[in-house]
Length: 142
Image (cartoon, rainbow, N blue to C red):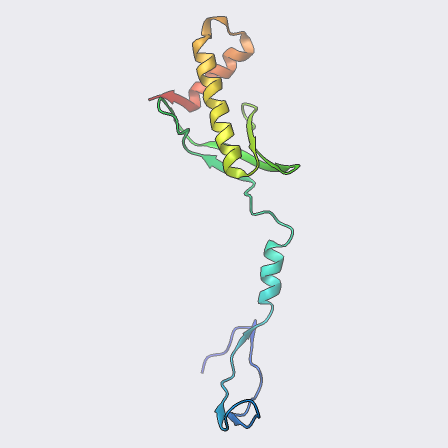
């Protein structure tokens, strides 16, 4: 007979058959293994922690004429009841009441920045030209 794992204990030696006023006579009792600490493990895993991930990879823009060359790493943070999705490399972000809204706001922001820079390339200063070059490494027309 195999040994039970260390975090499982038996309810002890319970007689196979017992008499009790609430149960019909000759009720069969089967000892059931109980996981010790399962509640604590679950509570420790989720207590005080958010289900919102710290980082995600954005794989598409959901735009009819633009696509990503490679996934964009977004840092996710909760601030004062809102979720912020930030692309630290280019200092762009989106925010919303929940993760999906923050990511969608980021997508819209990125599309607006790309299309705005693309349409005004001849008037861009050095910082915006550098941003445009960086964006072209990540975003491309379909």
